[in-house]
Image 1 (cartoon, rainbow, N blue to C red):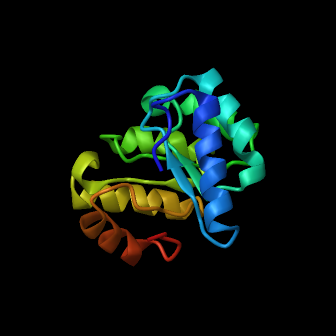
Image 2 (spheres, rainbow, N blue to C red; image 1 turned 45 degrees about the vertical axis):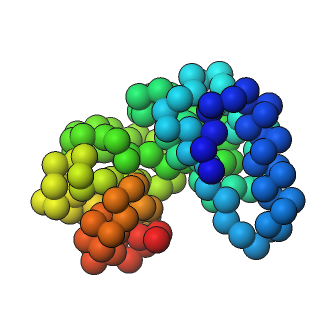
Length: 152
């Protein structure tokens, strides 16, 4: 579910409405596509903590590893990112800083299968699950082999 294109309160209301409609047994994932600034992401996390979403994908402009690390340490909302990150070094920063609950490398952005496997191996070394970061048929197949914790 995409968020970040309306106000934070409107986004929270929409997510709450979806939770009410589908119940507690259905996972809800939200994706801001890096549209929010830190205060907006912070407020949306605060409003959504009771909803217990599965993850909040790319909540902050530019997937800033420092801000994502801070956000993760101050919320119970699981964070995911990496879909639009174009190299292993940026993934490394997110992973070693503990900025994420789910890594989402995309082989189409990260530099192909070989770099994708390296990111997947790095995530696995930190016991960090991998979730689909787009181009699922290409990305998930390769990561499922590397990471038994891959989320489809």
